Structure formats: structure tokens, C-alpha cells
Image (cartoon, rainbow, N blue to C red; front, side, top):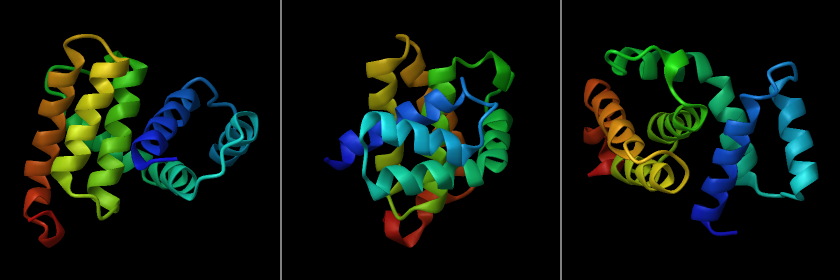
Length: 138
């Protein structure tokens, strides 16, 4: 599985989680990975990592979604931004790549205006957290 395919799979798991909040994060992961026959460390660590930091990630999304309450975001937009924030904040993936991948996912899976909306929010987060100046992102 390529990194892009793994990222898409991870996105679908993060999205799927929004429908199964009665389960623990670990239960959702196990069920989805078993049902889909997924055995990928990037997917597993990204899913667990995203949800271990979900409150911080959602707070950042909320703070930077000017004029939008997080509950008004589409589930897929929310999932895309959760994934991108996790990658920007907690992995060594360059910020510009994390944002670009999020925009591409939005173009593929979300409504027409979502990609520019997501791009704006993620860039605002990256600017406020000074993520664009991390050494690995130069």
C-alpha cells in the first residue's frame, strides 16, 4: 500500500469513527481493520495517534474555523482536518505536504468549496503554531 493509499484508508477510518462513538477507539480500529483486512502500521498508528490527541486537534480546528462551529462541519471535512492536523503536529511529514494531501482528499471526497475552506483553516493553524518554520519543513 502506498502512503497515499494508506492516508486515504486512514481518512476513511477517522470518518467511520464519527458514526461509532459508542465503541472505544481501539474497538473501532480493530473492527475496521479486521473487516477490511488492513495490516498497515501507518494506518494503525495514525488512527490511534489522531484520537489520542483529538481534543487538542478539535480545539485547533474550532479556534481557526472562524464563523463556523465544529458541529456544523461536514463529517468528511472534519475527518480530513483531523488527519491533517495530526500529520502536521505529530509526524515528521512536512506541513506543506500535509496540507496539500488534505486539499487533494477534500477535492476527491468532499463538496466543491471544501478544499479551499480546509486549506484556509489548515494554513491558519500552521501559521499560529509556527509549523511552517520547523527545521524538517524547510
